[in-house]
Image 1 (cartoon, rainbow, N blue to C red):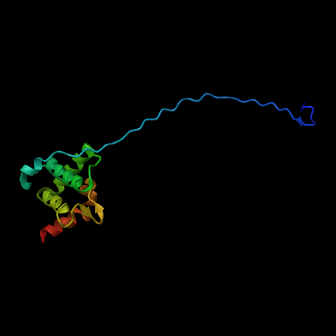
Image 2: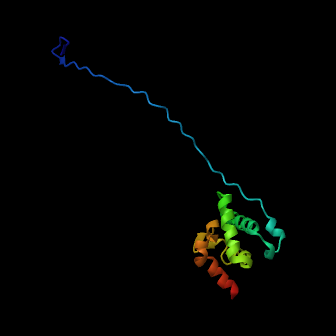
Image 3: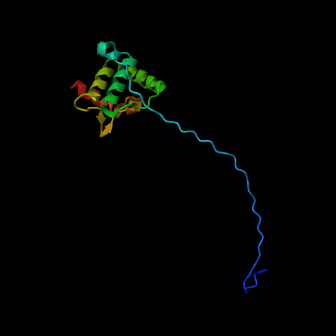
Length: 136
């Protein structure tokens, strides 16, 4: 106890504080900035001679026109559009054009059309439906 002579006594306490040095944390911020596609080689070709890259360029260009620049994955796009061309062959350009034509205008079932719509898993709900409409 510490007595201050005024009738006040304060208990004395001793405490030990341990300070630990922390390792500094380094953070890094990564920003992905989509850049609009400039490829338009498909425009100079007849649909019958389009390759997978022409189809990809058309689809990407149309998506960007309606929905803005997208984050892109070239390997994934190549795989998707090579497979789509293999499955749909001569109908592939017509399906893509219909998807972005005046009827659908880049939307499918109230959602923006993305590259993933051209995946095999989407065929029953997307490509097959459009192809059936084209046949009529």
